[in-house]
Amino acid sequence: MNENVWQKLPHAFTVLAPMEGVTDVMFRQVIAKAGRPDLFYTEFTNVSSFASEKGRFNALERLEVVPSDRPIIAQIWGKNPAHFAELAAELRELGFAGLDINMGCPDRHVNAAGGGAAMIRTPDLAVECIREAKNATSLPVSVKTRLGYTYIEELQEWLSLLLKQDIAALTVHLRTRKEMSKVPAHYELIPEIISLRNKLAPQTKLVINGDIKNLQQVQELSDQHPEVDGFMIGRGVFENPYCFTTHEATREELMELLHLHLDLFDAQDAKHCAMQAEMMRENLDFALKMDGKVRGLPFEPLKHFFKIYINNFPGASALRAKLMETHTTAEVREILSSN
Image (tube, rainbow, N blue to C red; front, side, top):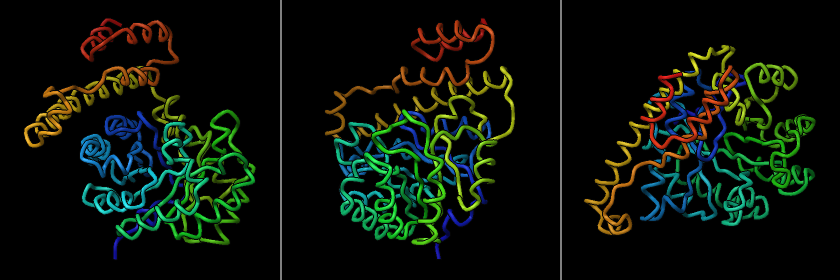
C-alpha cells in the first residue's frame, strides 16, 4: 500500500503556495535554508507542454526535485484529460509525493487556454481531468481552487463537486476569480467550507489560502478553526522568507540568503545549458528550434527576488535600485561587496 503524504503531515501544517516564476527549484532551496514549510509545491506545469516534444524540455525543468524539496507536490494545470493522465503516470519516478491540479489560477492567459479558474466553468471537464489523473497514478491527487469564478455563492455547488471526487486534499483560496487579490480573503466563509467538507468528504484534508503571511497567523487561524488541516502562505514569503518560522532575520542573514540564491542561479544556469546541449545532440528538431544555440537562463526574472532580501533597513531602496540595473550575477555580487 502506497503512503499518502497528506496523512503524515502534522495538524495545522504549512505549505508554500505554488507561484508562477517564484517557487522554482532555486527559490525552494532558499526557503528550505531559511526554514521550510511542511510541504512544498512546484510552480505550474502545463500537462500539454509535457505531452509535446517541443514543450517537454521546459516542463521537465519545472519538475526538477532536489533532496531539500521533499516532501513536494507537483502543481499541474491544463484541460486535456489524456495529458493529465500522461503526466500523472510519470510523477512518482520524478520524486513527487503527490500531484495537485490547479483549478484556481486567475491569470487570463491560463484561463483563455481553459485551465486554472476557467475549469470552474467547465465542471464536467474538471471531473474528467481529476478522474484521469487518479486512474494513472498511485500518488494522492489534490486540487487547489477558488470559491467560484464570479460570485462567492458558487462555492456550495463547486466545492461540493470537487469534494465528491474523493481527492486527498482540497486547497481553497478564499476569493473568487473575479476578485483576484483586490479584496480581503473571505475568512468568514471558513466555517461553511469546513461544514461542507465534513459532510461530503471527511477524509479529504482541507487547506486554506489567502492573506496568510506568517506562522503566527497560521496559529491564530488554527485556534479559531481547528478543523482546518493546513494553511498555505503565498505572497507573505515576499515580506519575510523566514515566514514559516518565528525567527526574526537580521540584515546579514537576508544577505546570506541572497548570496545563496545567486549561487543557485549560477549552478542552475550551467545545468540548463548542459541539458540544452545534450538535447540538441540527441534531437535534431530541438536543435533546429534552438537554431543550434545554447541559451542560458534569463537574468531579468531573478531581479524580482531582490526586494525579498533588500528591504527594511537604512539604504535598502538605494541599494535595490542599483541592483535593478545589473545584468549578471557577477555585477550583483560586485555591488553587494561594496555595500
